[in-house]
Length: 267
Image (cartoon, rainbow, N blue to C red; front, side, top):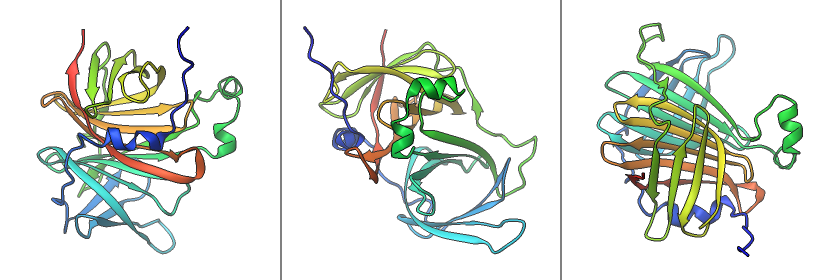
């Protein structure tokens, strides 16, 4: 008889998943970027240095809102940056940005974790109500950098190019997973080595094409409330990104740690 699977809390993965991360970059330090979104107000990001940024929104009425955040940035490809931070002004919320400074376009993902009561709600009732089986929320927005968003803006688009692929990701000497990209909004993960060895599940996901062989992949887990955001570079077979969740099952303590892996195709 096989050993009963145990649920692993998000924070327990941080050490193993962080071994093969891309190094942080300070190439954005000193830059100010104005993002004109397809929906919502324009937002100004000022990268004060390699560690802190400010974001400012200017609503149609009222005073501008300015917030200072600690961020992390990596560069998966020249002139393309993955930026991530926890949004302190909102409950259990993180923001991930993919900035393409050459094409002057950006994608913003605002992810929000459920409250404890939402996370523990019956999934069958959630689905019967017309909601996803996961209680993790994800809002995508698209922006033009430095000029008004228009029909000519080269925005990142939903892609089917990963569907049907089976890719193995090596996060550390001990931690290896495979992803099977099933269809437009589902994928299966399977732990081949590590503390989740033998565990697998199928979860909701989203795919966006950033450039040739470069993809933004986002998943939302339904058992342990988790948001995963990675940029997959199939030219260099490398990923960069983050995992966002609650620390050790404590719904009052957040964890938002960097992840990275070396990739290889599986047959």
